[in-house]
Image (cartoon, rainbow, N blue to C red):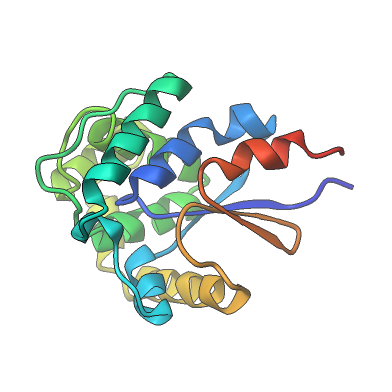
Length: 189
């Protein structure tokens, strides 16, 4: 029996960009992507984003180093870090449509790969790229059921111990950080 692989992510996170873009290749199968709100997880845990601290420059350099090592483009959006609420709601809808990975990759390539700001136009363009109608996606972003689904997914992530994104869940184990993908892939099967 193959263990479940669930990758918790937030489209605002550059570390999640690194994980989502290479997860299938490193793990040799596609994990289930689960959108959550990293900001809500941080607030629950009593901390904020490193992007708003003196550690910002150091982490930006580390992400750039890792992106180069992984062969991924990196272009920082002018408005960073963004508010990812609408993007995460769109990701919930994309997941319901069976397009979570394709949508996340399209958004990440536009933002961290191309420097676009994580705004409604970027989100709708990414949706359209993967076959989601712009009006349908715009309506989903404000749909109460989608809002509730994102809230519940985030609350569930908190309840099982997710500390931030990206976090890979293998069965009942949690592995925090994009670099943990390699450690999980190297484990004996």
